Image (cartoon, rainbow, N blue to C red; front, side, top):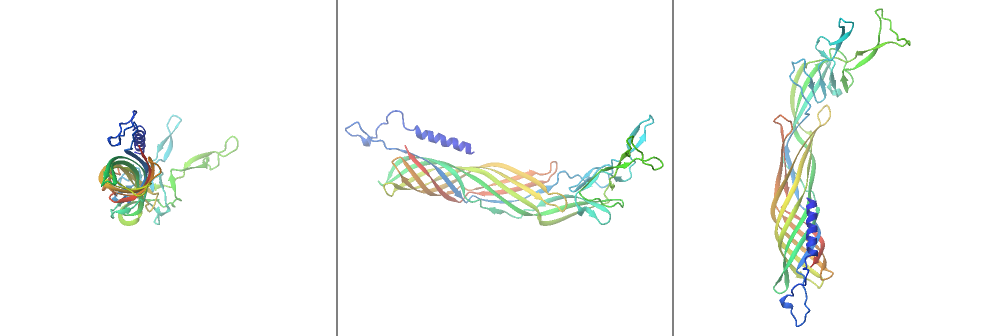
Length: 411
């Protein structure tokens, strides 16, 4: 958006430089004398400067669904399932036994299922239950809309360019002109807040079969080297005298199906934090009459009133951060980009200091009202499921005020 604005500024500046015709202009009828000399009065004024506006308010609200997309816990009866939890996993048993293939070779076969598995892992000491079981958890958080949260991003600086055409005088003393201007300002706001959320926890417990719980974080299968012995228990040696070793499975075994499954839902305001971000820019095109009040030879006061049209383009995003009781934080991002046209009006009051007939500095106050718009994100957060996030932001541009300063050039 800013690149287009800069290009427009260059175009208007070029227009100002080449606005005078190649040939001598026809003298105004009220300036003819009995000589060949006449006076040319500039009719156009090009203004370029800065425009600072505050009062672009924003508010955020909505609801969302946050979960670990990798979770897959299936039912509690299947023995050949791989169950993935937020804080661990339980897979299919990978233990093997070596047998003679009848041709002088050895083949490895999966052991006869015995209700345990050597393929599993868990993350947190809180999962070790005192009765000799490991608890695995799947989490979801549903954010409850608790009303809008307002944010005023403060002053936003931008550039403005204005072209004015002198029309004439009013009451024989005050000059007036028609002005058309274009300005651009940033539109940015962000906020972080804890959210009220319903936390659903599914807990599956697995038996350690009497074995002590390993130290977390733990991941199996695992193996270790042990000496190779003969039938009498003597260690077999290599040719260099070192002990022969063999790799054996040293995994702590876990039951391959859950012993129990429970589901609980609690409500709190500390587990989920939302990070709201709104960023973009808005163009303001304005046109209207300008009154000029001479103060001294070098100072002039101006007042401009008229209509305004805003084109706003914004990207709205929400990052949902969920910290469950066990495991790492869960993050979910939703975003949306939109543009809006907003009609309204403006008022500018400025003081100009003319250093010459063609060049001046100006400083003034501005007021602008161009309504408001609402931007809403509706996005599926779990592909293939009905879970969605719906977050809205209301951007209010109905009462903005600030100041302007820059230079004028008449031609």
